[in-house]
Figure 1 (cartoon, rainbow, N blue to C red):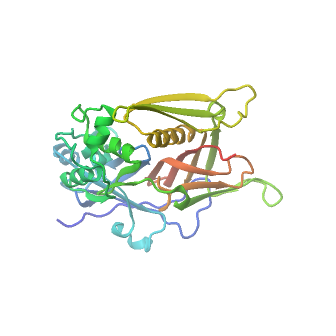
Figure 2: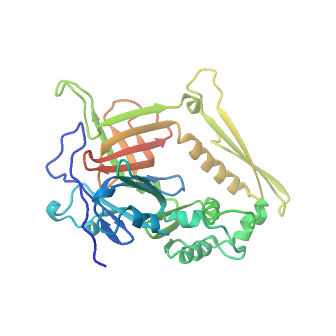
Figure 3: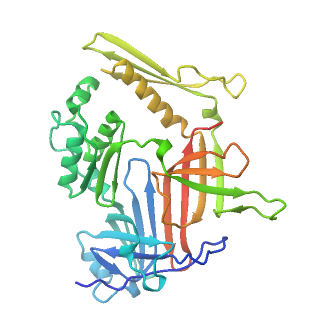
Length: 376
């Protein structure tokens, strides 16, 4: 069946001058067909080891013949692809396949409002296949990477996997965790990623199970701010809105202690991180103390877990949120570098949510939420 006519929009981000090269375009593909009639869509990418999500609104009167609300209501499954770009190679002849695909997913729910003539599709990316499937086999003699490859093949996903060496039975016997307890395949993968200190996520039709990237090697996404002064009476920035937060509770300091009894070695191990707690910035304030107990860990493993927990907790100390023109660059694997405010908030941040929206009357927008420990 040939593709249907693609929908597209163009516009600029409110509050910012639109560069001449910006000509945002977007398209929605359902079950492999490009559909006209969409009024707006939203795609949310996250760094929470959870599924990315989407929502698409269609004007039912603009849907092609034979693909109206009754067609949607009769479908057992619908695959959604959303494409977008801020700078298409040829704005007059937009070809979605030549631009970024923001999400490939499955519809979870269909909503039809006949009074408003609005049909809405909501769903998740292909992580949903793993989230919605319970573990049905024992894998104790396999490694984490072998299991990830097996699950990727089961769901038709391309495996982007770094080999691991330890059979997972070692992890479960040491930690007294039952592999057969009720859990989803995604729960299993995220748990194994924790054991291996790996990242796990689905991008398009690829399952990634790889070591956590070195932040020093990550691509930087710059947010520039110039306060009002002699040159301009108003601030100048490449964002439409920018807000910062700092947790004074976490600024008191954080101390993580991990304890473990290793039955085979007959020893108890304890590790605390950081090893020397810096003086609190608040006079008389004591650091927050967190204690964790696990079985079967060595001294090095206790230290590694303490460091990881410390990083996970303290990264919530400094936070930023921003509204920006939609672009083809920012994602949750990048580092956001803020410069120019002249404050302690000028530092690097790790994105946890990037949300993109496009509509016929509002252009192409992006919102960002990010966090990090204070660099000061």
